[in-house]
Image 1 (cartoon, one colour):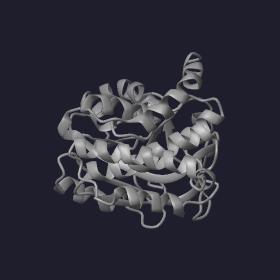
Image 2 (cartoon, helix red, strand yellow):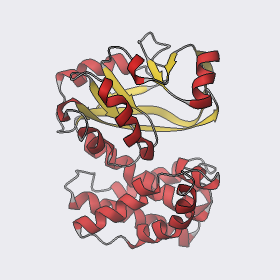
Image 3 (tube, helix red, strand yellow):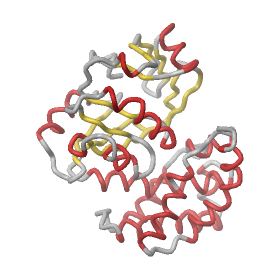
Image 4 (cartoon, helix red, strand yellow):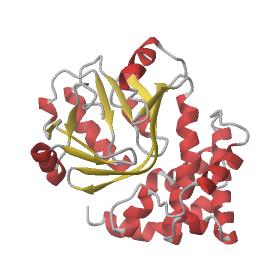
Length: 292
């Protein structure tokens, strides 16, 4: 969408996805209408040229490799942000790039790769929030936001508290991904069954307790609001992690339920619901991981 709006965008891709984009452009099938755009796509980071903003949109488990390949070719002044699920990507970026160049970000969208070079946007108005990790609305954030904001097709918001925004997604996404993956059911099923709804609510409450332990300023009614949001979702909605498990692909388990368990041990917060989810999914995750 940014390329279609006139911004100078270069995609780093690989394999059949790269081949398809180079041959036919990038196709987006969206709830707002389908579009196709010719866009520069490369596999070699050395060919990126001068970059003002590096935008990492990989899976969480791919981020480390992406950083290693891109970092040597990024100038010391380029801004960097990632929209991975979970709450750890900004720390990963700050460990490799100058911390002052890293912006926090989070994305809300339901989409998947339908075929090489084809993205299917199937629900939720696409929104990106980004901001300074220290929580201030800086000049660079305020200057960048109108350049990236495309209105209905892609809303980009400047955030004065991006850590809270990231955790407001995490408190929803980690539990929904975990319960959906364990039950192999869409959200409309597991939210209405008393037993699985209790598991869902317990997992959400554990994330909320973790946010308090880490002094992340979530609204006091975050648990209630998260459940209300889940109740409003399409009955057939499934998370990307659930689809990865169902299709036998490597998932983001370690960055969602696994991260909750890890942070629980670190901050002295009991996480029995998320620990059950993590333990139940580990065997399949390990089986897939052995192929990589």
